[in-house]
Every structure is written in structure tokens, then in C-alpha cells.
Image 1: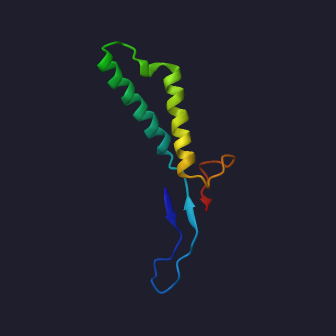
Image 2: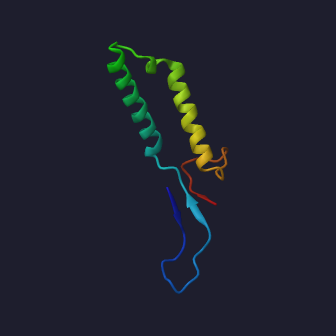
Image 3: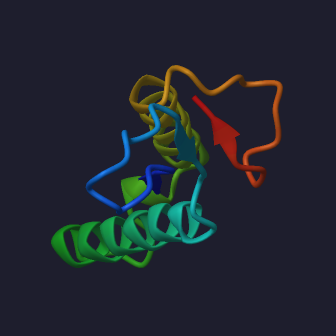
Length: 88
């Protein structure tokens, strides 16, 4: 979630800073998406376990998710906690 800290009053100059935080549901949505992919793959393959259940597939999913977040929010430092708002 990104939001500006600018005042809504049109007579004042807006501030140039932006507060950027990672929403707690972001990783949960990624988990839900992975589970949905696994269920769909099981139906397509008509098996109890699918190729999407393999640990390497799951690890690749998390790796891609983390890389996507890093690209989207390059100004966030990887050493800082994600739950704390960051001023960019």
C-alpha cells in the first residue's frame, strides 16, 4: 500500500514524501494463489498430488514473489522490517 502524506487542502503545497508499507495480507494472497494453482493442476493431471505440490515448485513460487516485490519497491531496504512503514 502506498499513500502520500500530502495535505488535502488545495491552497497548500503537497508534501513530496510517500509512506510505503507491505500489507499483511500480501503474503497470504500469494499463499492462496499457490494453493489454487496446486488444486487446478491436480484436476488437470487427475492425480492426488500434482507437479505444483513439489517442494521445488513451491520454493520457486516464493522466490518469484519475493523478486517481484523487490522490483516493485526497489527503494525498500531488504534489511529493514517489512511491517514498519518506510518513508521514500
